[in-house]
Picture 1 (tube, rainbow, N blue to C red):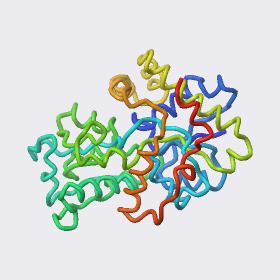
Picture 2 (picture 1 turned 90 degrees about the vertical axis):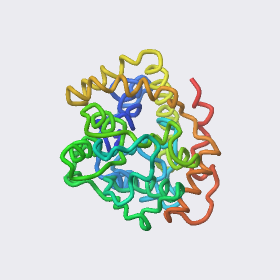
Picture 3 (picture 1 turned 135 degrees about the vertical axis):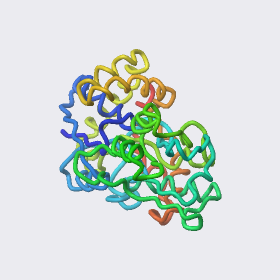
Length: 307
């Protein structure tokens, strides 16, 4: 079986990667191979077409290949809350929470990820169209296998962009180098309150797999829950996984990023979250109507979300 993530050298989907590398899928009897597939939309297309079995990615973006989530289900959360950071060039002099710093600036963001920033800015009274904010892909980030966050951090240091909206690893690299300043951490209270529930990192599979083999889907959920528990008990396991998957510098950073994320390592997908995600999806024009919670979440496995 195959599990795809759209960004590997990152903390965003790390529990999915760790479930493979720590043998927790195998412990549940599943032979799962980890694969990096970029861009994000291609992950969903390959899941839809049956080329892969699971995806670890942003829950709102499922609709790129499964309109209104029809044909796919969220199995469990990799981590609660929208998990991206707004980092601006240090020389701009922005302070944390100062959303006005984006006015007239160029911000790098990947496809589907950019929707979160655009909506956040609108809700915060800084409509990009009205304030000259350009939100676009980072130069050089379009190739297969390219890590978006690290590419964004490099572009920021080279001053080809004014800021970026990306994962915690890219943010950490930019902050440690001195090239960037943290302006927004959506998961930890920055930005409008509604933005926390725009999306979350989730483990997703198809309705077809669930119908064909519900035992496999249940085993995948148990593996995810066990991974969260293992990392909470021993965050050093993150370094072990990082040294298998990441370049040396990022491998030594991942433990700290995972430890910081541990309060959000909860596999539950609540009705409140789904309601917020649907409203966001309607606001940005990727959803019409109001599909019920049970049409989006594999609720038959919800009793497995707690260890």
